[in-house]
Amino acid sequence: MPAEHSYELNQRPERAFLVGIGLKRSQPLLTTEESLEELALLANTAGMEVVGQASQNLNQIDPATLIGSGKVEEIREALIANDIQTVIFDDELTPRHQRELEERFGENIKVLDRSALILDIFAQHASTHEGALQVELAQYEYRLPRLTRQWTHLSRQAGGSSSVGLRGPGETQLEVDRREIRHRISRLKQELEKVRGHRSRHRQQRNRTGIPLVALVGYTNAGKSTLLHALSGADVYIADQLFATLDPTTRRVDLPNGLQILVTDTVGFIQKLPTTLIAAFRATLEEIAEADIILEVVDINAQNAPGHIETVEDTLAEIDVPLVPRILVWNKADKYKGESPPELPNSHEYFDVVTISARKNTGLDKLTAAISRAISSSLYQVKLLLPYERGDLVSQLHELAVVHQQTAKDSGIELTVRLPANLFDKFKQYRISG
Image (cartoon, rainbow, N blue to C red; front, side, top):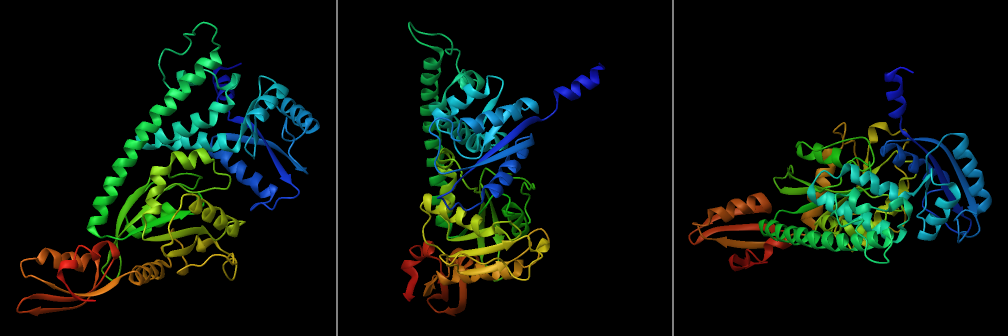
C-alpha cells in the first residue's frame, strides 16, 4: 500500500453514531428528530463524521442502559457493521448508564453524551487563559462521577503532576485519579475566583464611567458576533459554526443620537447545556447580569426559533439576569423566505422587536434607534449647574447622557439632561432640580 494512501486512512474523521430518545409524556422544546439534527451539527463541529443514527420512544428511562437491552444490541450490531468507533447519546447519561453501556458495547467503542460533546467543542475553542480554566473545570466536574476505564489518568492528559500512578498501599488507580481530580477542581475554582474578582473590579471601573452596557445573548450561531462587528466595525472572530465565541468580547459603539454604549458578546446558548458549564462560566455570564439592556438575537430561519427563544430565556433565568429592557432581534433576514417573523411565545414581553441582517448591514438603523429609546426609557431627567472650571464634566455629559439644553449663566453652565442611573449620584451635588 502506498505511504500516502495509508496517511489518508489514518487521518479520516472519527465516525460517530447518534442515539436520541423521546419520552412519551414529555413536551421538549425540540422534537427528537430536530434534536438529533442539532446533535449532528455538534458532532461535525467537533470534527466527527456522522454515519448513522437511531431513536427510541420510551414510556420511562431504563435504569441500566437508558434505552433498553434490545436497542443496545441493535445499535452494537450497527456499530460493528459500519466500523464506527463512537456512539453519542443526545441526553445526558448517568454514571450507571455510562458504565453499563461501555461494558455492553465493548472496549473498542467510546460512549459519549451531548454534554461530553459540548465540553469537547468548548475545549477546542477556548482561546484565552480564562476560557481554558472554565472549560477544564467543567470537564473535570463532569467526568469525576463517571470515572471508569475510559477516563483514567486524566491529570496526566491535562499535564498534571507526576504523582499520578504513585499508588499508596491498597489504592487502585481510579482512587488515585479521583483524588487528583478533586485537588485539581479545588485549584481551578480558586483561580476562577481570582478571575471573578478581577472582572468585578473592572465592572466597577466601567460603571463609574457611566457608559451603558448592552449584552448580546442568543442561541449558538444566531449571528451575535456578526452583529457586534456590524455595530462597532471592530475586528471580531466570526465563523458559521456552533460556539465560535466563548470568551466575552466588548466593543464601544456610537449611537446616531451621540450616545456611546458598550456592547458585549459572550457564549451562545443551546438546549441541554451542561449545568457544569453554566457554573464554570459564571464569571463570564455575569457580564450579562450587569447589562443595562439585553439584545436577544435569534436566527429567523431556525427550524424551531420559538424553541431557541425558550432555551435562551430559561438560561437567563438560571443565571438570575435582572429585569432590564430586552430587545428581540430577528437576524439573518436576508435568507428568510417567510412573509412575517415566526410567532413569539405569549409569555415574553420585549421593549421592541427588530428584524435585521447583520451580514448585509440592513435594519441596523432601526436597531440602534430601538437601543436609544430603551436607554432613554431608563434615564433620569435633571437640571444641573456646573462650574465653568468643570468643562470635563460638561464634555462627559455630552458623551454619556442626553443633553436637551445648555445655557451659560453667571454662576456656571446650566444643563437640562437625561442621565443613566449609574451617573445620577456622580452629578448629585450639581443638581438644581429634577
